[in-house]
Amino acid sequence: MRLYSGLGVDYSAGYNFTRRYALVGEFMWNYLFPTDVALQPLRVALQSRDISGRGNLFAFTADYKFELRGKLLGGYLIGGAGWYYRTASITKAIPTALALPAIQSGSGGDIRVQPER
Image 1 (cartoon, rainbow, N blue to C red):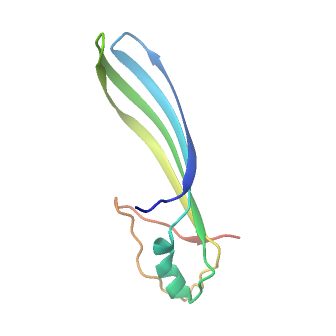
Image 2 (cartoon, rainbow, N blue to C red):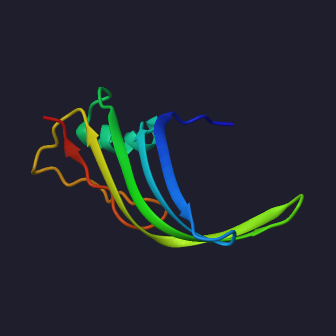
């Protein structure tokens, strides 16, 4: 078992129009620390072991919730839209002439690498 470190907060609030229908808003922030395995391609390309990094993930969402409540058990369906913003940085500058191998996240999309100033 591997443990990955990070920290974050998640705040949400909503309004129940009836026992079944509600609107929920949510804010989430996560501070992410990359693993050594994730940093290894950059360490090889820059020929330096002294590289670390960090990332942030912010999310704002608005959701509709349909809820069924019983005396003992209940359940709900929730769905909506949101805005997600992710940043990533490393502690060493990348020379512009250096071509790094492509880095992709598991869910698609991209990871933008920018040196800290």
